[in-house]
Amino acid sequence: MTSVNSTMPWFGMDIGGTLSKLVYFEPKDMMQGESESEIEILKSIRKYLTKNSSYGKTGHRDTHLQMDNVVLRGIVGTLHFIRFPTSKMKNFLVLANQKGMAKLVTTVCATGGGAYKFEEDFKREVNMKLAKYDEFESLLKGLLYIDKNNPTECYYWSNPTDGTKCSKVQYDFSSPYPFLLVNIGSGVSILSVNSATECKRVSGTSLGGGTFLGLCCLLTGCNSFEEAIGLAAEGDHTHVDKLVKDIYGGDYAKFGLPGDLVASSFGQMNSRDRRSKVSRQDLARATLVTITNNIGSIARMCAIQQKVERVVFIGNFLRVNPIAMKLLAYAMEYWSNASMKALFLEHEGYFGAVGCLLQYHG
Ligand code: ADP
Image 1: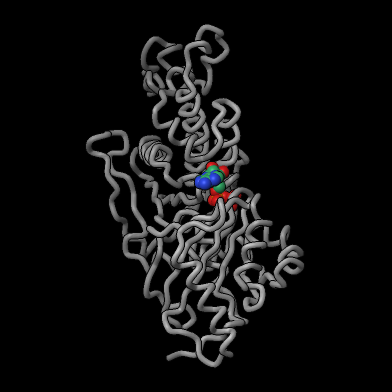
Image 2: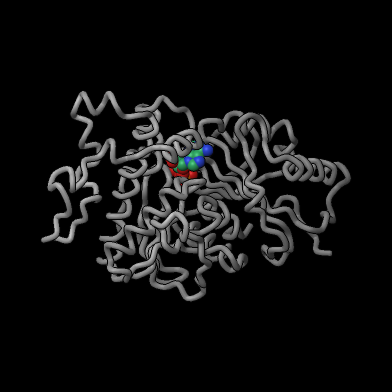
């Protein structure tokens, strides 16, 4: 049995603009060399985290993403994936205190802007030190580690526009370079990745997942991401957008633009009559299509500029969001004459948190 030092951080955290992602590594064997009282606290933390799938009012464990029998720093264990809104950080710290973590966990590996913003709060409220790591390096390290440990991590959508034929297909990501990594969080960052250690941020846009959610709440009165996605699934964006055929009466054949293409996002909404006829569902769908297509278009230009064929989309905007994934898959393939491929990863929003945990050398 390997001795597990409790001062070793078993938590990796990515504290983002909207969501905090917490990855907990649960060693398979119980700790050795700790005092009786330490072992009791460790056991109770472990029990609390692994027996529940929700924590307080807003914390969730994504049980479907759990990874068993992975090796971290030579120790076998399970990775658990937990998220909560960054706006509820105070509640998280109170809970961490109540569960005795403050007594035992001395260091948490952290990345994301919140690792800086909340550093003082962690020290003051729970006496924890944040070992901070670069966001993009963590993202890449976490992604490569998870992909190596999960044979079904990477996939693409085949026939993305055909409701009956569309399906998820596994993709072998073992020789991925070069590729473009498009991280769709609150905002969007686009990285060009040439090797396991070489990546640079080539572009980004502030029109990201946060924009989708913010606009959707404004336009439909919805109150959560899940609700926004639910509405979008029922809506029709062509009631909101102005299409090529609304302008040309059909295709714009000379430039190869199909009639169903959006010519102007929200372009019908200047008409009072049209406005009176759209539903909340239509508005949610149009917001989703607008934001997603804009990201797809920027990603495609970056892929051309960087001369890469594989474009990997990650980030929690893609959570429970097959509409956006299929739109991206279609857009990348269609506009590149099938020379580019949109790829997706199952642990979409958790790579940063995993990556910073991997980098710890305490
Ligand atoms: P960040 O690190 O900027 O918080 P994430 O990758 O966690 O970025 O993605 C945040 C985005 O994910 C939100 O802007 C929203 O579009 C989407 N999202 C998915 N699930 C949720 C949720 N439960 N609550 C809020 N936003 C969510």
